[in-house]
Length: 117
Image (cartoon, rainbow, N blue to C red; front, side):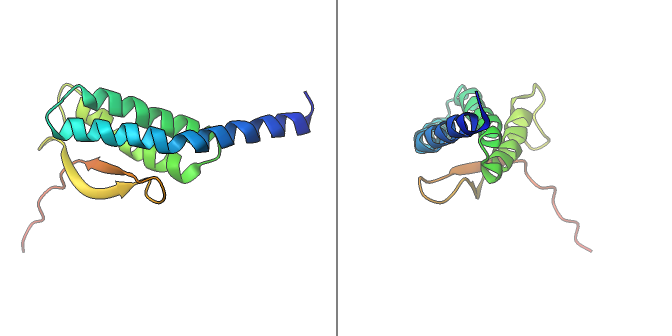
């Protein structure tokens, strides 16, 4: 395969990834809704989707998506550990992957309380 053929194939793969992105984000949003409703198993499914967005997004040239997914993946990994972060995991109002097609609500570790001086 020559350079032009490889480039054309990568362009097709990128276009396919971009076309499937709204569906992947919708799946992640559905899992997040299930998690909010008390379905603890949804956390593992959400983590898998975010992991794929992290890896494939980076490979396909979607650096901002990959970076946001990497941060969310690290948080989800912490929530899946046998001993979750102190204070547990909580939902925050932060958004990742916004823009057309919606976004994911980011799970973040609680911040430690500020000391009052």
